[in-house]
Image 1: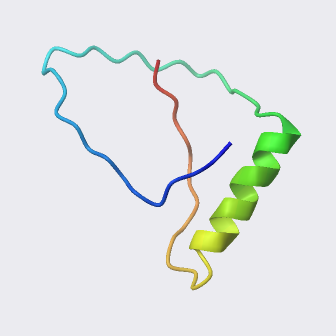
Image 2 (image 1 turned 30 degrees about the vertical axis):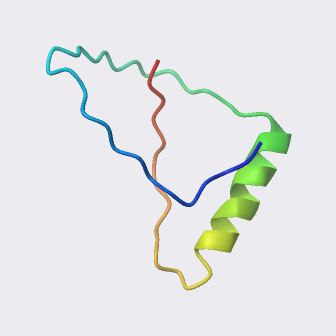
Length: 57
């Protein structure tokens, strides 16, 4: 798994419908570790704050 330091925004259709479910998804420990390592790399100056993460299907 690799992470990128770039953000890509794309135009999306205006008729998208979003449903929010209160369902927690737990990541495997291996992926959590990689995410935490990446976070420490990009946030060495404590510029960012961690918050909730949402998934979209």
